[in-house]
Every structure is written in structure tokens, then in C-alpha cells.
Length: 186
Image (tube, rainbow, N blue to C red; front, side):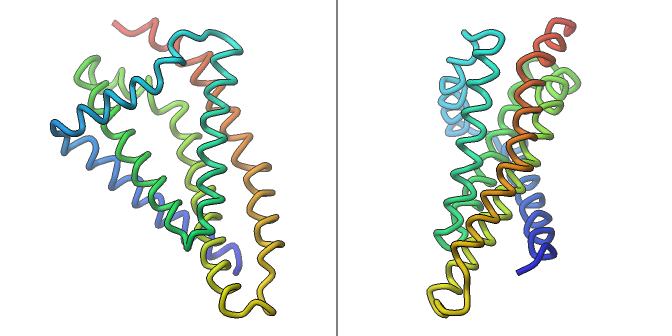
């Protein structure tokens, strides 16, 4: 498999993320408000943290989530799809909730500056996770001709070289820039 496959997977995951985002934004219902409450409660520890503790907490959660997205790809690529759909849907719900509370512009300022980098990292992680799923399937069928171990190393190397720096940058923005944007909101 080559990089063209990764680009194709990333494009597919971007479309799936956008579709899930729009579903979360446009089709909220009672269950979604419960889901949003659960999501908000899981983020409550962040609200009480400041500075570097907040930064490292956010970074830890995001790096762990994206690493699990890569690794779960081994299970025939199912994990990356689930991760993209859930994250897209929750992000859409969060944006919808935020736009009701503070308007579209302010909700966008609160979510998108750091979210762009988080979503990009997640799409890359999901793409390599799906690739691992396809390689694992090939390995089960033709063990002698597929180097599963090397492909896992490649996926983890990309995660470390590309995804983690994107998540560090996103965590920095979310910790140190977003609060200043909030402070300027009416």
C-alpha cells in the first residue's frame, strides 16, 4: 500500500466527519442532549485546571484517543470509522449547543481554532488505522507476503511525527488562546 491509499482514506474520513458533524448540528433530539451532558461532564475536569496542567490534560486525552484510533484499525478498520463518526457527531452537537448559547461566530471562535488541528490529527490517525486494518486482513490470508510488524511501525511513526505535534499545537491553542477569545466575547 502506498500514500495514495492514505490520501484516499483521509478524504473519505473527512467526508464522514463532516457528515457526522452536520448530523450532530442539525438533528439534535432528547437523546443528544443526554449525550451532550455526558460529554460536558467528561470535560468538567478541564474547566478546573489552568495553565500547564490544563494543557497536559487536554494533550493526554487527545493523544490517547488518536493512538487508540490508530491501534483499533487492526480490528479490520472498524475503530477508525467509529472514532470519526462519534467525534464528528459530538463536535456538531457542541457547535450547535454553543451557537445557541453564544451565537455562531462566537461558537466558531471557541471551537474551530484548535479543532482544525485536532480533527486533522484524528483523520490522519484514522487513515493509518484503516490501512492497518487492510494490512492485517491481508496478513491473515497471506502471512508470508505481508510485513504486518513493519506497517505497524510505520503507522506509529507517522502518529509520533505528525499527529502528536498537531495535537500539541491544538492543545496549546485550546489552553492559552481560546480563553482569551472567550474573554473578548460579548
